[in-house]
Image 1 (cartoon, one colour):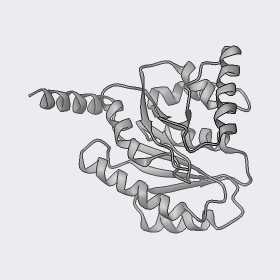
Image 2 (tube, rainbow, N blue to C red; image 1 turned 90 degrees about the horizontal axis):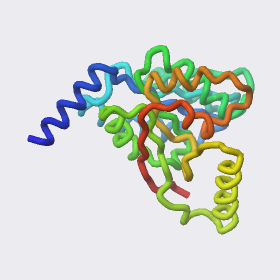
Image 3 (cartoon, rainbow, N blue to C red; image 1 turned 90 degrees about the vertical axis):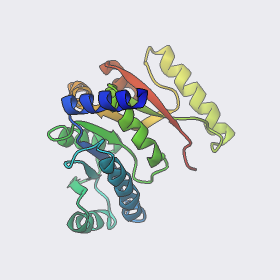
Image 4 (cartoon, one colour; image 1 turned 180 degrees about the vertical axis):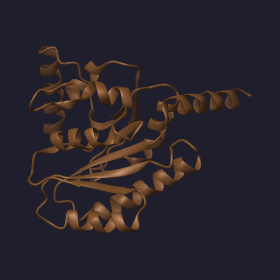
Length: 222
């Protein structure tokens, strides 16, 4: 009975907030991985769709950030044969953070929630269903957080700790071991996109947006 009540609550929240998901994927010279990335993300979307946790308007949005290889050619091919795939193309390389912002700006017009993830899928796609579950339970921001740094070198682990201490010293509120793998609800997206500073550092800005949040832990691939 508890589970049925829980599922009923989730469905009520989804009906109220909407459940179209867009997965925003920035790409720079990703021809080696973009087809496999599409395959893995499509499996996740099929699963979520089958469980009625996402709507028919759910998409994968590739942001081609001035790639010099066949990345955009492959994205165009995938758009023709995969119902989920959409894409936008930059005229030149603007950088990872700008690609994310562009993707969110496009996505907010039709998505009720977005998830951002890098094309190499070092962040675990299997964390995505839990992120969507948290959204269905009322969360507006869901942070993907590494549960360990065992694959990092001693130097990288040490500099990461120093970085977070330095940012805290400057008063920057950040989630440790979180990069740009996160879910945002529509209102969180709108709040984030109100920040107009150049050279946005999203890891430092997203916590300022507010709204209920949660964390999903996963093992990052090496």
